[in-house]
Amino acid sequence: MKSLIDILNLSTDEIDELIRTAISISDNPEKYSDICRGKTLANLFFEPSTRTRMSIESAMYSLGGNVINMNDQSTSSASKGESLSDTIRVVSSYVDILAIRHPSEGAGLLASEFSSVPVINAGDGGHCHPTQTLADLLTIYREKGSFDGLTIGFCGDLKYGRTVHSLIKALLRYEDVKIYLISPEELVLPSYLKDYMKELGNSYIETISLEEAIPNLDVLYMTRIQKERFQDIKTYENLKDVYILKKENLNLAKDNLSIMHPLPRVNEISIEVDDDPRACYFKQVLNGKYMRMALIIKLLSLYEKTASDKETANHNNIGSNKEIISNEKIDSDFKCKNPHCITNHERGLKGKYEITDGKKQCVYCEYEEDIS
Ligand code: NCD
Image 1 (cartoon, rainbow, N blue to C red):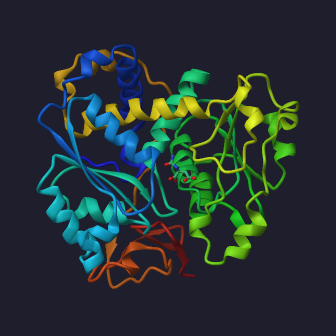
Image 2: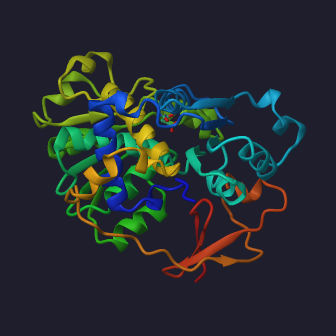
């Protein structure tokens, strides 16, 4: 049984297969409209969400399946003190697949350890958000035709922006991808992700200046400053409008730049940019639904019900195939130092770590700790 907890759970071939299936779905939705008949998905959202929850729900309905929702914590057993693992054991016995969003980092992985059905991680705190990455990859593929050789700028909250974390991991697998990390010092990318980049020999440039980076970019990925992750509201207030993409910034950009944003937008892209042909952020929304449909079909092993597996098998790779080898995982009495890690919130859960480059890395949230 396969779950999608981290984008690296999918090989590059599987991502290719999902992209081709999603395109086939968008060209021919009737072919897929009954494929999940008799199947039920549970949406377990422990954090606010509009688009991701509705996207997953609408994906399941468009495949002919059913959805049950638990989206208000105050009326669920979590409010009575039930552990996440118990909730997952119970809910997974009602359904065929479940999607979870949770404020603790690593909650998706924990859910997959206790679920009897495939799990989709729909966002675990500031850690990762692999289904948004699928939406983003389909958008980039449709706009650019390939991933290899692209220069991509990530701008805004790179510290807590989980969509950024997952998309960077995915892009690292393709050849010659150059990454600009555009953020204030307080919101730089977590070090474990910079380490991945170094490990795979990818080049990245860190800057605080959007103006400086923009002329070089093929894709600009703007993000919201993640207010809900700040301990101190004053820091958020100081940083919230640090980047606002305006029409005049685009004078410096390439004619074929693709401007992306996972949404919701607050202030970081001014509304006047929406009419620019380079704006792709509303296209990402529908691409997200198609990719989630393709993902549900895959995780429920329903490919054989469509011709798409045969179609996809005969295609060449969309990008090159740099797989990431995972290290041996060590069970122990390890205590993760990240206060947002699920291991610090779930009763009785033992920490697990792996050693990478002289550092202990938590298996649940990927937080790194020096052991030298
Ligand atoms: C993102 C998220 O939840 O991380 N939204 C989404 O899923 N489309 C981005 C955000 O909230 O800023």
